Every structure is written in structure tokens, then in C-alpha cells.
Image 1: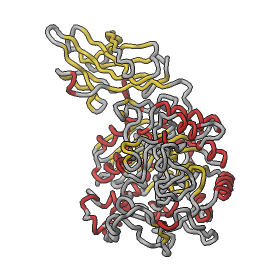
Image 2 (image 1 turned 135 degrees about the vertical axis):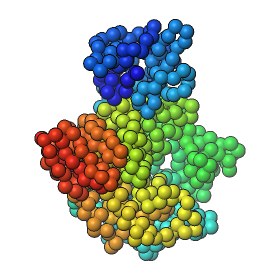
Image 3 (image 1 turned 180 degrees about the vertical axis):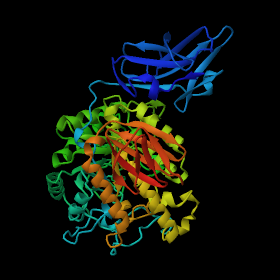
Image 4 (image 1 turned 45 degrees about the vertical axis):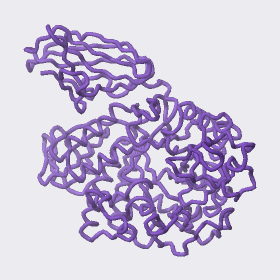
Length: 616
């Protein structure tokens, strides 16, 4: 009766730049009578709404007529829109039903569609586009015997594991657990594996925090200007960055600016440092950084963890400490050679702080990459009752793409192609092209179960906690999960954005949530079949890099099968137990786990296949 989907009926598609003209087209059946058909658009930031009636454009050959409405341009912002259909005695609403249009009687029954309008000057680093990223949890990748770690300032509370294969401590196994046990992974260990990264065609490495901290995750910063002594030295890190750059591998650091550690120069609760910390005195130069409820023992901390006192981001002295263009933390590490930041808990920062981080990072290096930890659609996220503007051009370049992580895993497990396509197209429609091209596509991280564990169970949380430290997948569980991972990684490597391998996924490591997703890299227990798959997959992406820099078009959606174009490459995932025919395409298979059958009218894809076709 009425046909509208922004993917196909809004021009241009996706997010638009400010002042760019925009046209909507709606197909309405000829025997559908109405008095007025209008679009209603609301500016989310100003609260101002405006409407405009559609105009007849042309008659369609299939008993439909095309109506349109156009606009000369929009200011930068986030907009939501729907259509109103006016009849003699009532008004109905055309609303967003998983991107398709559905006519309803109540405006509140379904959500509006979204329109993102971003700054025409918004750019993201070209060097990152089309590349492959690798994430390392620094304490757990490799321990080089060439580096002997000195004693730390808080050595008395740290624990050094002798065995690299030791199972990390946890609240399940140890009373008063505080993440203070270390496997002693270090900078030289990572550098010794440079040829391994080159074999995987890695062009950037994202390191979880490396700064001094008494805890193995190092999110409890003790000193913002010093590499943790267990991991290396500042001089070693500078050389490390330079050496990797020579092989076209850039280093991205985790920026933990929402909180410090309680055992730090700035707070100094345990007097391990010579400074007068905010816990020690109200006269401390750092006292105003923190929010005390009842000095000194009660204070605001991240999610109630008293080892992570939160900082007052609005405090000018603290903002200067992080962002000063000459003396700040951000440029200190960029001058040592890093190429960008992943901002921990980006939702915790006020807009002004994020604006300033971008300004500071780009001041020193206009091509610095800024990735935010955001778990939802970053264009419409609300945090602390504020609609965020991460992707409007003044803050982030990219985010960790958890929505697509979930979509990919659910698709390969449950095979719902339609649902998968909707989840992909939502972000394609909402994200500015510069951000979409840089989106960090992951299948897991240090904050989730490992992907093989996610694929092996319907719900990993159903496994009793006491079984998790030493849980071993059965051969049947592992083999099934490994085959699903091959499908999932193919999708991860071919969707818009940049795939990021979490260390060890490529060799068959699995595990439940922290700390069992953070085991030592299994150097002597690599699954060669899975590793070869990742090497071949990375070669395929690297050899066809130009096709993966930008551009995306959904081509085929059917039961358990989906296909999409990345320029000259057609990517097909068939999870069905029967073959599928993809019409109007033919070409040569350049990657995949099966043969294709080419006809003059299209290609036939066998069951249980992931295949890339170079389109003729």
C-alpha cells in the first residue's frame, strides 16, 4: 500500500553533510486515497519540528505512484522523522518498522527514522581505512627473557607468576582478588613477534593500557607519564613505536581519562608515592580532581570500585593536565610515536572534554585516530541524560562496533538473514561515511567472552562460575565453534570498517569473561588450521584493499543467505543447507571455502559457504 525505506528511497543514502540537499520518495498505491501526505522532521538538539507535504512525481507501472519531497539543506545535528497521512476524520502515521514503513494509528507505536547530519569538514584518517587491526592485552601476549622487570613502587602488593601458562587469579579462586597477579608480558615480547603480525597483514596494534599501575589490566593509572616497569621503559616504548612504523604498523593506546587509580601519584591512598595525593590532604594539588563524599574514605569511583576514583572532567586543571597541547598526557604519548587513542568509557566524558581531546590529538598529528568505547549506535546514544554527538565531526573518528559483533555472532549461530541485514543497514544508514569507513569491527574483546566461547554456547553465562577457570570445550564443541568462527571472521573482514583481531582468537584461544578471556597467548598450542584461515583471509583483504576502503551495497537477502557488494567484490554468506542462486552477478571466485557455479544469469552458491567473487 505504501512503500518507503531510507536505504532505497532517500537520496542521498545514509548520513548527509550539512547544507546538502535531500530528497525523499514514497510509493503509494493508486487506490489508496488521502487528503494530505506530509513528512515531519524534528531536530533532536533544538527540539524544533517542521513539516512539508509530498508532491506527486510520476505514475509507476505496477499500480503505484511516486510522491516526493525535497529539502535544500540541514544544519549539523541529529534529526528524527516520520510521515503523517491525513484522512477526512483522522490522521495515521507512517513509522519505522526495522527500516521498512508501517502505517499505524498511534504515533508512539513505532519509532521514527533517523537522519544524521554531520560537519562537511569531518574527516577520518585515510591510513586506517581498508586496514587490519590487532588488539593486545599487554600483560598476556609474550614475556621476553631479554627484559628483566625491576621492582615496582607497589611491588609488595603485586604477584609475579613464574609460569606463562598460569591461570590468572579471579574472585572465583582467590579471596580479596584485586587483579594484582601478572604474567609479565612486555614490550620486547611483542616486538619479537613482529614477523607474525606482518604475516597477518596487521597495520595497527591497539594496546590496552601500558601506563604504571598495580593491577594487570592497568586501567587504574598510577602515573600517566610512565610505562609500567613490568612492561618496559619509556625509551623502549619510543623505540618500539618507531620500529613498528618502519614496517607500516601503527600503535594505538588505550586512554584512561575517566578515572585514576587509588594507588597513584594523584590519589595516593596507600602512600606508595612521594606525592601529596588527594586522599592525603585537602591541600593536595590534585584534591579538586576528585569528588569526596566524606573525606577521605568516601569518594565517587567508577561503578563503585574504590580502586578507581573518578575524576571531575569539568575541572580545568585536570582537563589541562590531559589536553594541554605542549605538556598534556595526550601529546606526550603521541610525541613518543603512537598514532592514536582508544578512549576508555567514552560515555563518561562531557562533550567539551571530548571536543578538546580531538582538538589536542589532531593538533600534533592531523592523522591521529580517535576510537571511542561506545557499546551502542554511537549516533543516537544517550548517556547521563544527554544525547551524544560523537559522530557529528568534532569528537570521535570511530567506535568499537559492538552492535555488529552481536549481529554477526547471532547470524552465524541462528541464521536469520533478514534480522542480520537490518542490524547492518541501521548503522550504514545512521553513520557518517568517514566514521563508517573507520568503524572498529570486533568479534570479542577484553570485556567480553572470547568469540569461540560465544559460538560454543547458547548462553556462556549458564556455565557455573566454579567451572569456568579450567573449563575445556569438548572436541565437538570446539570443532563446531571453529567452523562458525570462519564464517564470522569472513563477515568481519568484509563489512565496512576495519576488522580487529583480539589476540589469540586466530589460534583457537577461548575463555569466559575477565579474566579467562585474558589468558597468556598460547604460543605452543596454535590451531594451525584456524591460523591458516586467518592468514589467507588477511591476504585476501590486503590484496583487495582498494575495494574495502569505502562503499557498501546490500545485494541479496533470503532465508539463511545474504550477499553484499564491496565495490568490485561480491561477498556471499550461505548458512543454508541448500544452494542459493544470486541473480545478475557473475565473476570469478577469489576467496572462500567452496566452489561457485557461474551461469549467464547469476551465480549458484553451495550450502554452508562463504565466498568472495570478483565481479565481471
